Image (cartoon, rainbow, N blue to C red; front, side, top):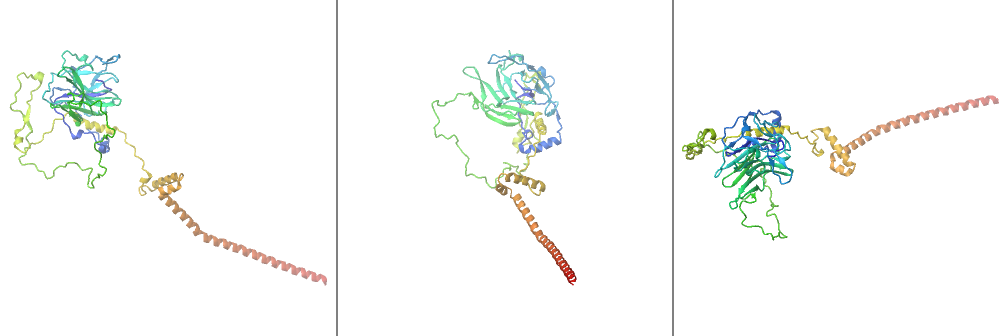
Length: 487
């Protein structure tokens, strides 16, 4: 495997069940803000890691004795070019440093960026899933991101001569599964090697349309389920992201085609690729509810009287017996297989049991909340002047509207009046008010000016009268003097 500062925890779980829970679904966009507020206000209390009691042909939780099972490779990478690559990357088992979801939960960590890493563990015994459902499940935590590398695992073909330190990309395998990203390539690999029944040669079969890997810093649970009927399911965090058939959805195909395309055929000039188009005359019904769920709980439903609340759905098979060659030390505790509870078929039903859960299913939503809390809050976008309301902030409303009016008026005054009529109307009202005030003050001013002119005219008249009177007196005195001198 090649990683870029990635982390694998609870690396492989083969066989057993795969369970989903609504609580671990990726948070939808409409709930992001609420989740962010919750994450920032109250930090959830982390659960403490406890080893699971689930049984499987191979189960790894990277406990303290992990080095007794896992061995790193020191082989040289098989390359088509002349350049040689060696698996020199170092491994460690540590708790996550980013978005810890469970206290004490450790995972396998690659320690060297941009280096080739490979590590393997042997199964206690060969796995034969003929007629059984195969489940491959493991967690990936890219706590430092992923630019170019793979975080996938391989189930190797049985080879007793293979030494773990010689494990490389050329080692024969049966299934390859997991995320891989480099450049524009980002997918969840699912490749299996198929043995041709006639030639005996193995050939890789690649999933034609693999799902996209989620490159995030939270723990991602990847699950592959292969059924005996040659169908498969790929899940991410318990959510189904891909389903298909081993015989139909892989390339090259397992079975040869009955018919092949005519290499001499060509597309007609009037060919239309779209077989169906949206009805241009279709309209949404007036009573259509976008938010209403497709199904609701039947509020009138009642529990049947013969419902067995305390009876389990399945019980240990009473006829099952422990095999004679069963070894408790090598094979573990023998647990009888379960069968449907016959009491449940006789009655209307039994209580639904909660599915056993992996601890990783609780930590994923907790890590998501921590991731949301670290995201920077988006700055509130300024409102457009057209979205402002006068009653919300009168001063801001007037300022924004006036600035908009001036900006438009500099280029086109008429367009400014049409686009911001409130300002144009306000300016017009202001001008009318000023003119009215001027006209109202004009008559008193004119009267005062007329009175002043009248007073000035009166003063001039009085001065003129005095001047005439003085002149008459002077003339009279002169006449008297002349008369006296004559006599």
